[in-house]
Length: 212
Image (cartoon, rainbow, N blue to C red; front, top):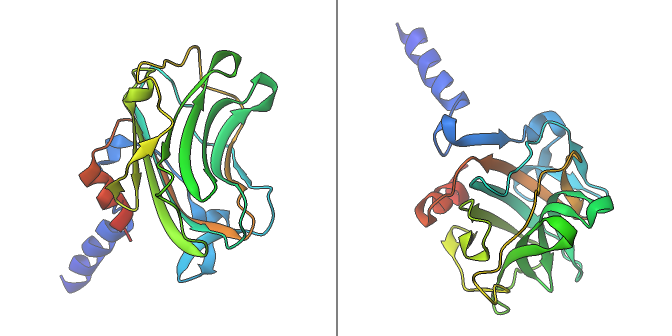
């Protein structure tokens, strides 16, 4: 009986997840990809700006809601970084990207002709070099910039770059190119990467940030 109780608890822990199973589109198996101890976390470390291709990453659809959650180590060097992306450079970077420029994180979706919508933290919301950070991007499937929400380290932050809230993305963001983790994240790392099939709330973003 004691063994069965231990086994049941162990199964719960192994299968534990921050949101409902049906909400998950994809969770990167970082241990399988080579994660190791780094700056206090089990993480996938990147020594160069090459990234790691994840062939089984899902294709996102501009007409359907989704959310992306990523925990990453922001490198010490003062430069621009690409945390994760799934883009086709032959189609004017059609797809999506999470990046950091001038220490300010953001998310961009690119459709037909390179036209895009994006959301970016305000200029005063800057990451500290050599620190762990967590980003959740939420999209409602409306094709409009106003349908994007951005959460940094578990909370909504002031954002910029929206301009006209009626800005609309045209065409598809789905590409055959693989998901690239750490595409340009030299000396950085990723400790958790998840994708969901719906928009998430601020409280859920907080849960994702606090998830061990």
